[in-house]
Length: 294
Image (tube, rainbow, N blue to C red; front, side, top):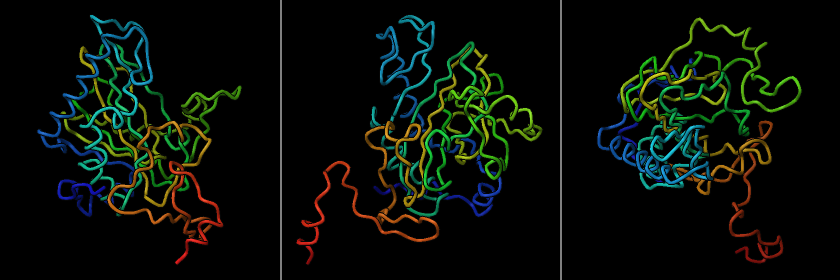
């Protein structure tokens, strides 16, 4: 898959800022015509939710949801559920931006659309992403798009600059239960004086590294705050199976964008050129492969 590149070129200064701070905040970055298509797709799922009384595999509903007053927490895997989201993530602006930042082909991992509904849409506590879906390196990044204007009252995402270079926190409770957030004791040791709250008009883009400490407050405004998210890694970075969300990310997870993966991976400083991906077709035997050699 080849993403459009011209729209996603970053300056040298922006590239360096991402390396130094672990995030980017690009106001009004998505062209209006593309934004309208994403907004329209998001609205379709709001209408679809009116026919649901409880969450299903596609839509995660908040308590109090009803046909007359929808309250959606999340659309799971939008890339697998609508052409507009699929094109944006695998061929469009998000794909091009990921290739630009990671300087080459990228591997798509997953996507989600967090609606953060009005009048109390839920807080996301301080956390890091990499513990949810560990990879063989720390290249994974997430690109977010605000589908509506976002101000301070709407629970914008907050990031701690350069925290991607620091501690990787335990996101289990003291009794060993996975909670997906940094425990209170560790939170108390974090310096929040430099938190950047990423507000902006519709079409603004956020990018953050997988080790970035980030979170968001409740949405206390009268409007939802839909944030479309898609995650990528370098093409030679692979999700580690049987840990976290790896393996339950969507049927297009693993798609390589902007070139070929080459099936190479670096382990302890040594490059391994692995066999093709046989996960969907089934693996041949060593005998068949060797006998087919030309």
